[in-house]
Length: 591
Image 1 (cartoon, helix red, strand yellow):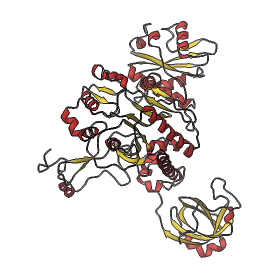
Image 2: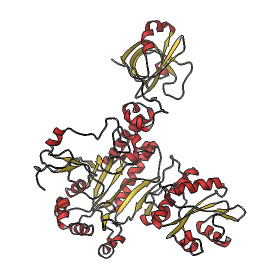
Image 3: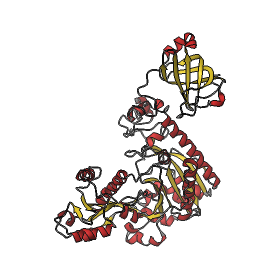
Image 4: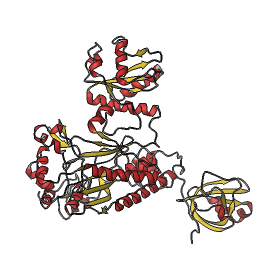
């Protein structure tokens, strides 16, 4: 028996018990006549004490101990004279009478403690060591509990979990696929799923009514803090539902997760915000509504006054920062530098201080009058003591920059509390978006998203104005998930393919099996998919989803721990009928 108890188990009620513990040495403190050892396992830390009497017989073992050695110890539980209230085992210690080294260890490349000295790249290279740290352990435990609670809620709501294929047909729409060469079908390829979209729709055609899956998905796209080439999503689909049915069901799941995992009770309904309003007032389709500071468009009232920056601008808008009129010139210069960063993209910043005495101090005094500034203040709802910040330029770019400025002010004013949660549904997305480079429309979500009934006539006349039966769940400025009501009529689906520029042959080649299935009685259906990694990172209070994934990739899509992706042997390439450039060889089966 390697252990009778774990390192996080012993309490004051266990005093005088003889115990055996096993774990990793966190640290050793030799105080002369007495040595203290912190022993760690997944469950916690227990302090071991080797006194001067035992040290004679254990001296060799104690002298040999180093950080991260794996040891087995025996001893008797005693009450600590100097208690540690920071850990659950802090009232007791184990007076050690036996130590057995089970395995030695090299000195770790970084300290394995909550506050480590290892940078992210180093920790990812030695991820198996990083996972010994409490923050990583807590994140994976939270991930485990969330999966259990999702399955419990979904099962109670009548959903059935169904596994769908990992090797499937490539669908060029959307992000780039990861492709897998087929040895048995030379020159042909599987794709790893970007989502189980077509399969869950087929399950609805098959009559399964309520499906879900916690599933791995793969997208070959540029990475950032909330993206990975392989990620996990909670994938769901329902039959005989409209948009409100879907939103209400998964609003319930969201509230259940908050209550069970964070002990946060959300009683009110989540607000519904049209996409157009999200862009108009926040400059993003994932607004953070924990604080106000909505955009105000002053294009009409501020242009035509001889100030070239405004006169030449397509859009002039800003935000009102309450109580910030006392900002110094240094503070304002820092904000100006912030908006000029390449990541933000503004050319400059105009400020208007509404002083406590009712006067105005601005960066554009010589172009505008006090009456102009008072009119602006009224539009912004500003009061004495407030600060108005204004950007101008091309509309889309300026809205994006203003969004970044708003979030920066939210951070500076402490308005983005990680322990406050403000969920909302963003609805009424455009169905299509135009791409100037390819001169064609693309589906904003995917080709199976249903247009709103009242906009159907616009598909022919003005496709850009058609709204989708689509919705995103946004919490604290993070898109947690999204979905739509699907097209279940093969005639409308064929029309959608035509608007997207598919020829009949292309549509048949890529989605013929789905269109054929629709001919056999497809019910009205819709669904949603949530980013499981994003959920966990939100609840864990961390910025990057890498922190809540056991073995993540870095920003370049590499696993620095096992050095993947990597080259494969010439023999493997030949077996797959690929040459060294990754191209199909001449003897491959023709398409």
